[in-house]
Image (cartoon, rainbow, N blue to C red; front, side):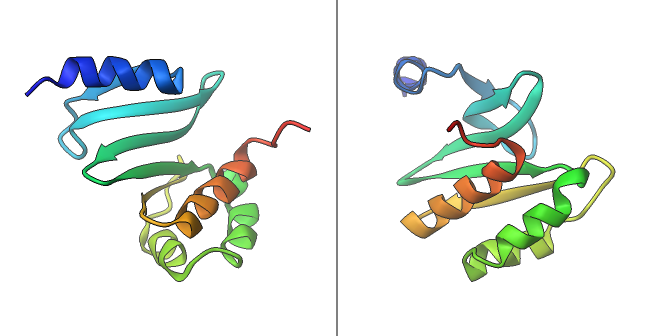
Length: 116
């Protein structure tokens, strides 16, 4: 299996460094999206789709809950199953439809205001 060339190809396409995580919870190739030192989202490659791990900071909880009112039932369920901590919530969202992608974009917009 030739993973390294695939990872380099994705890194060039997305202009983000691909990393191989040996983490016990989510081992495998991923792309991390950050703004400065702030971690926004990590995208994990899956067969046929991707999973986005979106972090919701404690200070953004109220705004995220407002956004959830417009999200799919699946995204709402993931949010409510996730445990809140001092560091926030981590939502593992399988992007298997255009609606799920829109949910991820809406949640990310809570943390990063889109460019005008």
